[in-house]
Length: 552
Image (cartoon, rainbow, N blue to C red; front, side, top):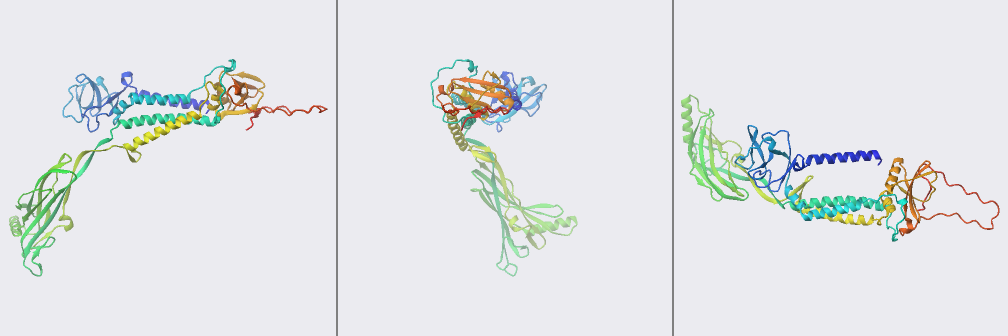
């Protein structure tokens, strides 16, 4: 990466960091953001104890905003919702309170309006600021600093070489150690994130309260029965459910209805059942005929029966039509269950809904079911009851719901793997104390080319430190030549007739490693007579790559 893209990347990253700092800088330090850890139940169900509310100062506030202000009465920060205005003051109330706050803050006294809610974020901050969490973050930070430490700079080529104890040469090549250092930086970052994430997961409760709707079902079942003279129409002399009731033949007709209440965790069921019979004409006229006795609900079930007097219903219809001067026609006879059922589901009270009645079509000779028997004979109704239940906490991950126990285990595995990787990468990428040459080779292994010998030639400029030489190589987009001699390490960059050089005293002998082997010309026999053979001159520079490459 050359200087311009690197500068652009650094500028963009700096701008993002500054924007984040400006956005979340605390109000107590001159910023515009307030952090509130909630307590109590005044803002349930949206906020629970331990949640973190992030509030941001606003230019104006309106009814419906969740705001925070410092209460002089309670000597703490209160976060409630604006519900009304009282002149230039705000009327504030908790969502779960049935009373208004006594204080009426002005706009200048408000700390901000809600920007973000972090479930259990307040508890997580408490855990992260504990001594154990701070120690973990400190260890990870020290590891990162150790992985990214830079070599000491200075004009080493003008200093006397310092006597060092020889040590064995590194077991890994410079590119491998360079990659190991990059891996160490990444592993350190992953370790910090896994540690912070694991701390947050440990701070979160293992369970959570969820609101869900449970259904209380009332299932009804109608039936009717009567007697009749045995014959072609009723061979058994019985009028059964589903049959057409011929009013001239049938007697003793009655309708029964059984109501059964079911649902999860029902308790305290109470109720009663009664059947009401009415008759109605197509012109909108209706009248009450009779009712059944009231039957109490017993163990979630009740059955009531009511007699059906078709003769009386027919007589009332005839009299109605005679009064209005209209000929008799069909009418509707309805048996309606009047149900009153109450109880509780997991501590939440409910009142069951009503059930539809059973309709018959009544004419001068018959009584017939109105509708399909399978539908009208078995009505049902459901009553939704909202309940809170404690369930194992889950975390949404993409389209999955991950149990918190699994998430904690994954965080621990990632943390352990990152720490192991960090330790191994730091060991592979290690260098000796003060070994500037080796540090430079490892840091910029992709741009360094080992050579056996070279002749600088032309003008030589000694740079102040190896990083300055590396910047020169980046500018010319060329390689840094490295000659590991017995007395010193020489790094050089050639640009036409100018050589930029940095020398590290000490050399391979002081560091306990073999120097790059030097090629020597073959000896000339003493008895050779005649002119000496002409030795070709060294190869001329070719761009910025020059000298002879070290043998591999």
